[in-house]
Image (tube, rainbow, N blue to C red; front, side):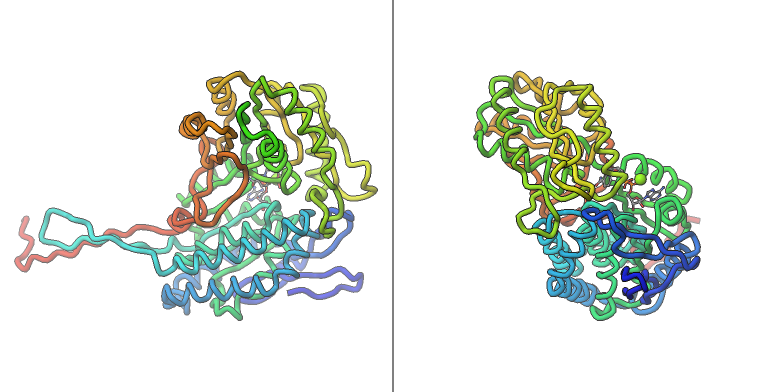
Length: 493
Ligand code: NAI
Ligand code: MG
């Protein structure tokens, strides 16, 4: 899938109809390593022609050829083999992921293992897609059958590149769909590596196509294509809204995961040490480039000064460094664009609130898109740094008095992806759990994510659920079958 150019840059090809190919234009675009700001690879720049080619391959593979004949058992086995190969190549994949995205190698290793687990989980689920017998009041057999939706377009972001590819591909394949996956332009490399495992795993050509390109030139025509039956998207709210509109013309099924501004809520009776760790982990994991980042930290007034102080002191000790060093706890942001965006929010925060830690570029690093873990306090929930998704290591700490106020502030956002509550009073925690308007709620933890449990947002964080049995539902249609058991003619006219 990759060759060396004369400048020593790895040149990848993309994957259409079971083959590694160039783009129709023959153009490539550079992929940057965020810790060095240097080009680490080139990938084909796909445009509408390539989209058409990939969708045609996916449609042909759905309509005819080996895939529609592949049993659920065999679809499951193919997914198990993909998982096994990911585990075998885990060290290589983790290194590539870490270099390309900037995430610490230890986090990348978790992500790669989770990606394999996701293929295993849905490999097992392929044989558990069940229909129903409907108890209709007639001499008839009424059935509901579950069938794959068809061709799925899957557009993913750069924060968990291979894991997001797994979350999209594994349930779709288990359901019997075919796929055109577009990785983010910043981080296409591990998805292209993954493509190299498909033929060995027994996946017929055209079932998965992976095309690399930019949002407007490649993502947009993919969403509009009339032969695409479903779009699954994870990314920004702006693009999510555009996708929803574009999908309307051909009534595509859509699922959207659009991030958020998730509250991480600390009551005075929470275990203090765990709380400080939980606040930092919740917002700084993966450099804060996490859709469920606990970026609004709500703290009960009686512990507020002590909390801000302890959290800030500990934030200053977070080890920033090259992502491949095992001691590194925070790497660079993914790109110059994201660096500029996060830097501008750091500056905005200095006008909107008080700064307790960080606030700038990481001075210790001479190159790379590193920013300091940053904590603002005395933030008003209506401030832009409390309302807008920053997607970087920037926390907004907000004081509250009592449960009712915590809840009001927590829910006062257009988003609703996730929330966390910290308290040793289980009844208080459960009252909050019930009243929080979010698709994922953690108690005395934040961020653990499991393939067995549903993932997705309320409100403008999107709709549809990934993972667990919910994840496969989004790739299935339901067909009603009515079998008349009467022997005499129907006789209405
Ligand atoms: P983005 O939403 O533009 O990119 C995500 C994916 O959508 C990429 O594959 C991109 O190529 C594709 N895309 C872009 N424009 C498209 C279009 N018109 N039609 C179809 N596909 C399109 O996100 P971006 O610009 O990388 O990041 C901006 C902000 O978005 C971040 O700062 C963050 O706030 C948010 N974001 C949220 C994510 C989440 O997990 N919910 C992930 C990534 C970004
Ligand atoms: Mg964008």
